[in-house]
Length: 194
Ligand SMILES: [Zn+2]
Image 1 (cartoon, protein in one colour):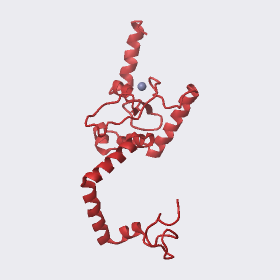
Image 2 (cartoon, rainbow, N blue to C red; image 1 turned 45 degrees about the vertical axis):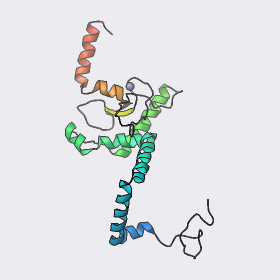
Image 3 (cartoon, rainbow, N blue to C red; image 1 turned 90 degrees about the vertical axis):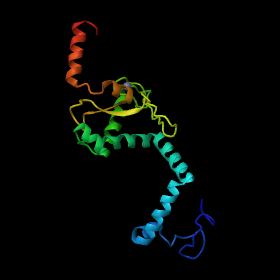
């Protein structure tokens, strides 16, 4: 993918398609406030146009549907200030550390189920998915989708308290504390239900 026609601007040696581009867009954008203002306006008009909106939607859909994009969004949600305020707990872990914990989880699950790819819910041990409903006009809840649970709800997102799971299991667990679950298990055992 090189040769004439690829870079259509004039390059440092005066020829088309060879050499480095002389005009560096990023540098100009960062250093020329007038240019930046003009470009931002141009972007805004484009983003609001039908074409711009369609391109953005297509991008969001393919990004959100990809595994990496979906997980990135999930991790970002844990750090959302409004959610932190609601939870009353701020993550005590970095985004990078969450990715590392996820890698560990996959390895653990792969050891347990060597024929799997390790992308299994920690609770029900079924495969999780990355389905999105953007653009369909409806908000569909996919219970098989990837989600991150705080195993102990009284603790924040931190190493040792992350449960990579399906959102179905996460939803069912919801606000149940470990204390409550222990009590339910005790009663279930007493009643010989399990
Ligand atoms: Zn599950």
